[in-house]
Length: 425
Image 1: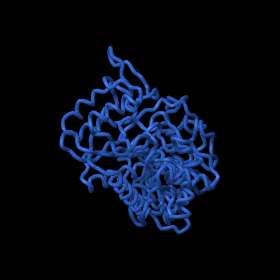
Image 2: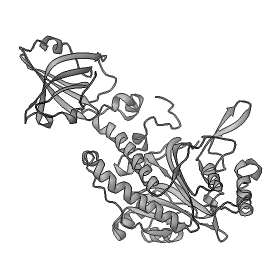
Image 3: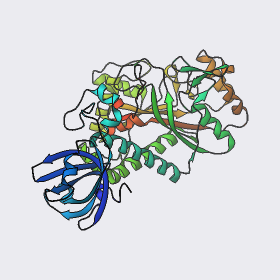
Image 4: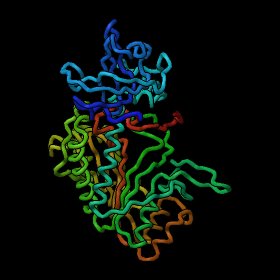
């Protein structure tokens, strides 16, 4: 048996077996202290010179994986207020010397850390990123179940580029051209023709965007939902409630991680809503340059600052973007506008969504307006047979994690980041 306890489960007076990496070794001559690290933290192993295991412990070097069994004894000066007095030790796996990167206090070059991602994750602050990310998705799914959404599993292989345009990865599917899905959008919409009125999906999506920025990835984890709805406000309220639930639960479940990063997470009480035109007027007063069809990175940052000052939250919904920058499936509002939205948080867009065009003829017209051939889209046939009005959204999980922890680069929140240069590990 490798373990009976994790490091945070051991109590004074118990006999426990723990498996972990030798993070630090101090040999005082007739006394040794080994800091043993597992996924939950650290425990001090204290070996006296008269312990028959002392010679065996002397052969252990840093980052060797070992199993130690022994009695837990109270010691206020040790981590967690106790130490483990060993009765047995087993070397499970040796570690080569030196390590390819430092996993202590000296931080290696970022690209080097990504090259050795799974060794770098031995640093508690790096592992904490992915523990928080995991908990975010758990909480999202709990919220979806509370709101009667059904989980679907959409294929990431598609015969048409979901969003239109050129930012997709073509692949050879036997003797046919196919694409890696830019989103599960067309599938999650089409499912609503079945009678299921609320669905969600979590999975990777792909964008062939040649960006070299701290906010872009070519592959990222996307949380998507789609629901029967007539008004944009219905979708906004759903995400608002979800963000309130996520932040409330993270404060309960991940306090140690938030404390590690010195984050005080506040659940939004009410997320302000501004139209795209209103947002540009606000930014103009702040002397921030704007664009005619989309938010700029600087605009996103400054608008979140405005929301924090005026509404006490760094969340803000920006609605009614011009059709020119939105995909064909968004319902238009008038000639140029749309029933669309982005959710900005802490200076960055984390969500895009809106009311979809469920009417067959109008959807075909939208596709043609984008200069795309409607015959490329198999999903259209489902829109001929009573498709209900609906809307939805997509959240970038890495971006949300990044902004919650105030990380500098979205790659820090991606386990195996894929950008224009990286295909390993």
